[in-house]
Every structure is written in C-alpha cells, then in structure tokens.
Image 1: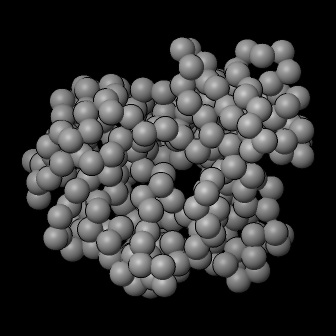
Image 2: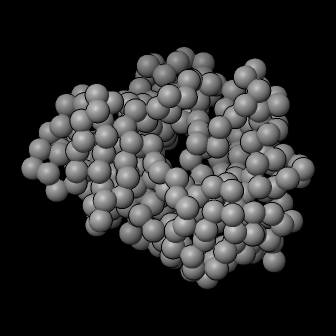
Length: 275
C-alpha cells in the first residue's frame, strides 16, 4: 500500500475543533502541539471530553490553535480566550456551564468519561447514560492528553465507504479527528485494519500501527458547522465491528492508532508506504 498524506490535523485542546497544517514535526508524543492542553472538570477531576456529550458536546463549538507555547481559543460568540489570561478559566466555565481549568499538565492517572455509544444513539445526546472510565494515554509516552496512542490515521477509502453507505453521501474526515488523512485510492474501506503490527513511513517519520480505532459518539455530534450525523457511528458499527485489542470485545472502528518509531517532519502531500 502506498499513497500520499492529503491532510495533517492537530487539536491543541482536547475535544475542541483544531487546525489543518501544511507541515508539522512528529515527535514520540505525536504531532507537535496536538492535544497538549485540556480542560479539567472541577467537580469530578476528570478531563473534559465530548465522549460524554450530555456534559461536553459544546466543546465542539469552540476552536483552538497553537499560539507560541500556549493556545488561543475562539468561543461560539466570537470571543477569544488565551491560555495565561487571568480570566481564561472563568470565561471557559461560563461558556460551558461547568467550572473548568485549562491546563497543559496531565494529572497522574488522568481519566475521562466515555458514554456508552449504543446508549447515546438510542437515548439521545442529552440523556443520562452509562459511562465507561477511560485512562488516558496508555499507548503513548506521557505529556499529552491523547486518548490512547500518539497518532491517529484514517484512509480516504474508509471515508468513502462510510459515505457511500450513508444518507448524505459524504463523510467528513474532521468528524473522526484524525492526525493524518492518507489517500488510499481505490483500496478497500477499513483496509487499515490489515496494517496492525506493520510500520508505515510518511515523510521523514516512521509509525507503527497499533490497533483499529474504536469509535465513540463524538463523530455523530455537530462539529462547528457540520451537522449531527448518527451514520458516522452506525455505519462503522454495521461494516467494521472488530475487536481493537484482545479482551475489549467487538467495537465499531474506523482508522487506526499508531506509535512513533522514528520522529521527523511530515508535509501535506508527502508520500506514504507500508514497510
């Protein structure tokens, strides 16, 4: 398998909208500036994540970009909040309706709540459903707020297969929050499943594919101007229900997680190939 990297994305604040990049350095912890910040919920001590949409879906109405060593966040009403501002926590708390703290330091043993996706689909995004507690970054070096591994990849053939099976005829990569979108041409949808255990070179970086990426309810939510689309989860559940890691049980998956074997710079348009 070979092709090109058609898009590079990072999300400076966990669960907020991110930014597309022409070029980025990839380190052991992932794309420079990716998920380096998060909001901590003062009530629970957990990391705020749209995986619990009843509480945190409004994070996806906010956009964040890297700003030097900090971040700049644009709220839905157009106000800008910068890390280091005296009122940053107060303004973010007001916008979300819960008291939060913006931080670039991941607490030891940091967790988030992941609402059971099937229950969200059945009961709706405002309903109280069961949560699974997820320990962050178990497949990644410390230092960021990634869910599991440093890098998330998805192929265009997978997005095309989901789009073809859906009602809208399109499926935006942004819903799945990948770091690198790979042009996989006319390959099979969900062909990334077969990459597990293999190395992939893209630009100067070499990545080792670890596992298919299990999907939660986040892709179904409104993302900025993108409308709600439950097909973003229902379709992978129908077409690609696989066990990401032994013992987890079957989950709807799209894309794959990867760790960084060789750091390096990656540019949009760089070739990739499986080694």
